[in-house]
Length: 98
Image 1: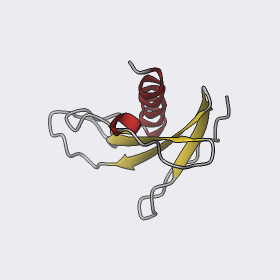
Image 2 (image 1 turned 135 degrees about the horizontal axis):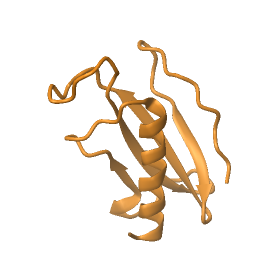
Image 3 (image 1 turned 180 degrees about the horizontal axis):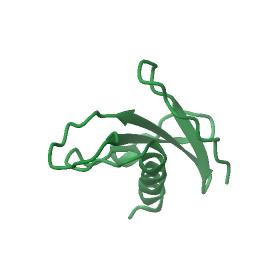
Image 4 (image 1 turned 30 degrees about the vertical axis):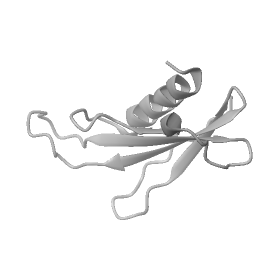
């Protein structure tokens, strides 16, 4: 399994997609900072969400509806790394058909 090195995303840059291979498919995950959109979460940390899309090895999007997903809008993750990990977990679920 290929994993990209974690690099913090500066506040004013375009989101970057990270890629991992899994069962002959590629999972592409992008994290996005959502600064304190959920007031019920206290603390000084940022709130992160993710998007994931599945492609075949030639980077062509898969032709079925469940080839992409986003994190639940009611949930936020406390770090970029956690949001990224959850995105790849969701990607594996999409590929496995869970």
